[in-house]
Length: 308
Ligand code: HEM
Ligand SMILES: CC(C)=CCC/C(C)=C/CC/C(C)=C/COP(=O)(O)OP(=O)(O)O
Image 1: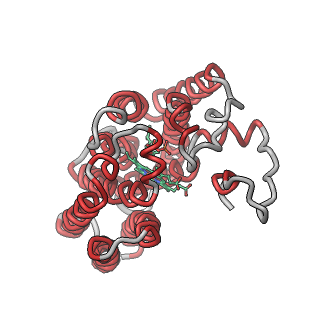
Image 2 (image 1 turned 90 degrees about the vertical axis):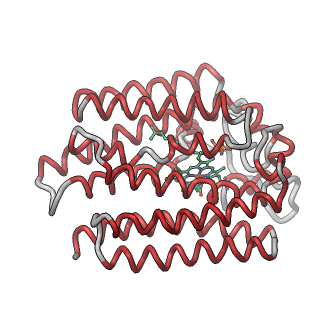
């Protein structure tokens, strides 16, 4: 059961969940599952940046960089929870958050976010390299300030432009290992960038009432269900092409290609089915499939790099 399930009002069958500990409350502000996938994508950037099997110093550098990126990404997520405490309180999906419930004060959340950001940035600056620190810090600002504070309340294209910060992890991983940003890393950036709109809009479709209440100009609220479904479909087409790029540009082999084709057909298939015949249940499945798509796509890059 997820925490948001506990917000079902006065359910006769659902016993109240025990109040989470202070540690759990702070930890959940870092959006752990999202950040896990973010760090995994950074890890794949690291793996592809190093030809063959990594040496022990490379492995150690990679693990340290993962820790630094993890901390700064968690800081960005916590800052988002702080800024959006009022909005989160209005939405069923997010109303359980400790900041929304007032269990963690604004000062505490700010201090927590700042501490994670300073710690993570210091690790990256002193133990990895300054370029990775600056890129990761720019990503923090991109998500915490540009997306959360400026774009999200301003335009339905918020997640498209803001998605650039979510797409940065492979670039950060690559920079950590090589001290440089390469075109190959930018291909991985492009894949996550194009994946983000169908990922988010599928969720926004079946959570549309939440977003209406929030007052945020999310696409299904401003442009309706049908237009959003069309956008999802179009993005999955372009994403399909982008997912072929690692093979075309010889960053991967046949294993990746086979997995990428199957996953892309799956994602486009969901988007097509959603376009033809909408239901909340299908939108939910499409959102869930987006997570499988990105996770397996990047796992295939890893396997391909080592096995073939
Ligand atoms: C601006 C970009 C993005 C937006 C607006 C967005 C939005 C969301 C939202 C609203 C959820 C919550 C779903 C729920 O509570 O049921 C979610 C879940 C998730 N997102 Fe994203 N997302 C973005 C980018 C990313 C990126 C870049 C990644 C990873 C690389 C990612 C990975 C995930 C994962 C793993 C979940 C599931 C979390 C869970 O099950 O608790 N998202 N996303
Ligand atoms: C330094 C670094 C790598 C930073 C990564 C930034 C980051 C955490 C990107 C993930 C994007 C994300 C959690 C979107 C959730 O959307 P939302 O915030 O609109 O969702 P909500 O409604 O659940 O708050």
